[in-house]
Image (cartoon, rainbow, N blue to C red; front, side, top):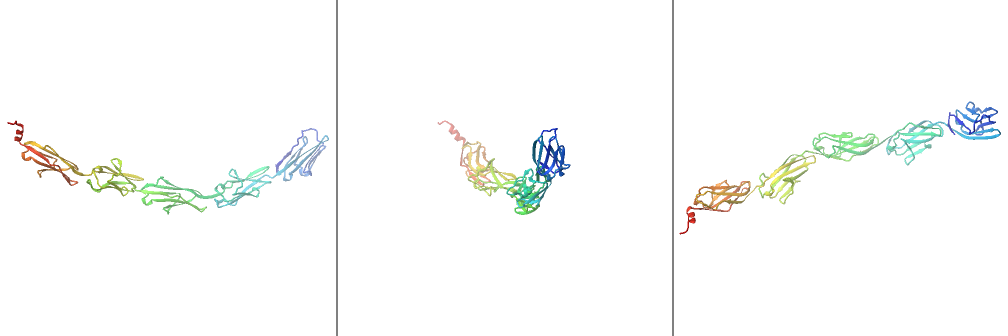
Amino acid sequence: MNAAVGETVMFTTTLTPTEKPFTSVNWNVNFSTPIIFVTNSENTIGPEYEGRITFFPSTASLELRSLTLNDTGEYFVNIVQDGTFLNGRTTLVIYEKVSNVLVTSSSTDLVEFSGSVSLSCSASGSSLSFLWLNGSSEVTTSDRVQLTDGGSSLTIITVTRSDQGPFRCSVSNPVSIGTSDPVNLSISYGPENINLILSPPQGYFAVGSDISLTCSVGSRLPAQFKWFLNGDQLPDTGSELRLMNVQMSQSGNYSCQAFNSKTLRSQTSQPSAITVLEKISGSSVKPSTNLPVEGTSVNLTCEASGSVFTRNWMKDGSYLTPTDNMILSDNNRVLTFNTVNRKDNGEYFCQISNPISSDEAKYIMIANYGPENVQIKGPNKINIKGTLKLTCSAESTPSARFTWFFNGTEILTNSAEYIKEEVELSDSGNYICQAWNNITERTSSSAVHGLTVTGMYDTFMKSSPAI
């Protein structure tokens, strides 16, 4: 049996209650110390038990009160009834209840991976057993955890953040249990897992934009921050760097560094590249000559203000595939026609872009050429007094201007038609049309167009019968 100091214990026999008194009953402890002797209804009580016991004659049971540690021992009862001898025995152990459980720590302010701590548990009571708890989990020994002094001392070597607690010491014996107040350890760690977040989350920004960079890190104590641009420290501090109305000069690689004043450790983020660009504007395509002539060299130059990254050329709505007479140079800035020809005519677009903007410019190519294939259309024979109409044509851009010659003498200018009413016999002869292109400054002449003016006599002779 187990009992606590000051409590009451009942020694109960297995006898059936009887009204007939027992011949004799003798209770003692450890065979040497009498508690009570009953015979012929007379009770003899040991001096140590006066006022502390109650005897129950019907069963020979015994109640013992106000227990002390000295009451620990082996208890015996000897009973005589009608000449029969009966006896019993039991063991009683008295414990002092657990109280005043207290945990003390060698330190409560530690640095992860570089500090150790010892926790000591003290308590009042007897036959004490110790159990340590970290939160709700029992603490057991390991390569970092030592339990000594019967479990009352807990030592943690090379503390980690999981050792922050709360730690409690649970003390028990067979009759009671007591638990200490919680003890928390402050374990500083970090900085670690540093991360630089860019908002908006892009690498390219227009001049005048607002940018926010936020540095996050795991750290206890809270980390202190420094900011760097291309490795040079900026005056800004704090976990956020705000760049307002940014300019191109603020382009570069930004990084943050976190420092823990308790652990004396620091960590630097990976750099985040920021490129500030001017938007594309004022795009244009400028030709090397305003009047390209077939067979000559022509350059088209694509220009724009802003931060130009790429230029792409299109012709008549499709991406340009340079032919043998074309060359793209200076990162597609210049489109060169070594010998431009009329097949190159069309609508050219230069598309200019960077990661934040784009623009385009248009140029209509017209290759001037000719004159070529000059021809005269009209009659080769006409009656006298008839009306003569000759028409001259030529392939030419721009349209050609025409000059007429009769038998080598200039007779008309600036007209594609030569008209003469009431022709005479003297109008018979050779006609030539000369075409002139004022842009190409080239001339070309038709083949000789012969004309015969027929008189009335000739006509009459051909129509009269022979005599």
